[in-house]
Image 1 (tube, helix red, strand yellow):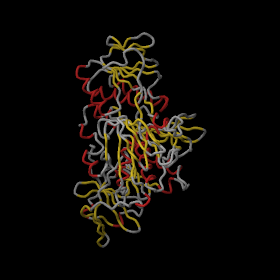
Image 2 (image 1 turned 30 degrees about the vertical axis):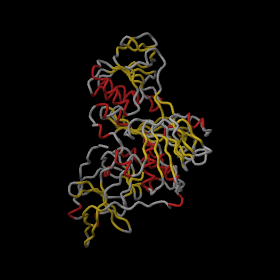
Image 3 (image 1 turned 45 degrees about the horizontal axis):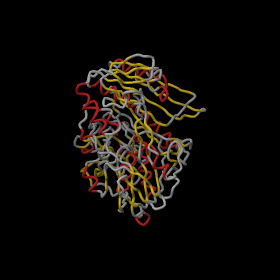
Image 4 (image 1 turned 180 degrees about the vertical axis):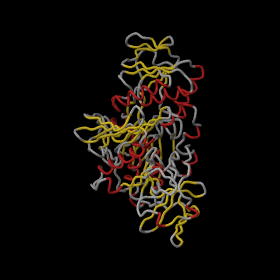
Length: 530
């Protein structure tokens, strides 16, 4: 996966730093040999790890330190500052470690060290064989965590996709815009699966789960026995039923194959209609405008995403897109696509050579329903992702989880949430005590403007704005019955991290305040501490 290299700042740790300048808590940002490094002092020693997130190279020196961990400001990946281990998605690779030497009253960071050994769960508690149904965010994260935690049994991953697990959020962003090469897209290279003994089978559709016999049966009749099963079948794009919406010039965007097909179809296109002012719809519009293609966005809302983020952010996004040449037709529904135009309910004809549907997704629940699992909008699971059937876990877009804050069952269609659910399921399968405690998090980026959202608000009765949404410097808080349930930030990555940490603390059994544990990492200037 590609990314942006974090630029080093702060002191040169190779030249030494006075111990007095290293705080007893938090961390200090600097560099070694031109590479960013974080230095942390604790009672049992001083530790140094890379200062660049292994997900997309985000600057950890601008992140948030919580106890012995650091969270990336870009996409909220979490790392252990002692071992460098990637504790929570979207990062999977550990940070590099560096050898630290104390000489008198100065501390020096020397050469890189070998990766820290990962603590393994007790093998006797492991199942003999695990099958994962699904090759998306949750399925991949579970497989990676299983091997990382020492699972040595049979591990089979059945994916209906034609391509190995990929960075799905990028399919509607840089990759579609033509600014990211395809080698950024796989979550891991092909060799990863062979090296970790993950039997990845692509293009496999599962027809049946035999719960009593603990067997998965494919549409071709192949059978896969399991001791533990993760159901992570994800979701599929909703298609419109009107005339012409089943034609070859109508696209959806969910898989790498979808994105490739859309890019190939753009060669002779003069205009595109995006139906749905959703996150995927708006990101597609922004990416196509980056290619210079005229775009019209059609949706029933008065403002884009107003039901999710409120009218103020909706107006901001509309203004942002219109400033970049997008034409909106809101308060409208599309009835048909014919003769080079989308026909709206009021009779308007919107010229378009190609249509992209961004009207939502539907969870793939049929396997769970046929198998008799408890389902209510999604597969009902506990905090460890266990379903109602013994030996079966569920994660990702199909899972209905207890909300870490309220305990209410919620189904979240977010990439990072799916990955973290997969990781929790993997740990639970291995007999480890694991619960989903982090709040849902997602981000969108359009025309270089990022919006980060933590928590989950299916509805709210109060909305509070701190700052200026119009100037992309604001925190928008969503409350229900006097309680904060979600927050969106523009231009305030540090605030987004702080809110995520506060949500995590609220969902913990330890009721100390977030201020007791959280040390904000400030943007480092030479000589400053974080």
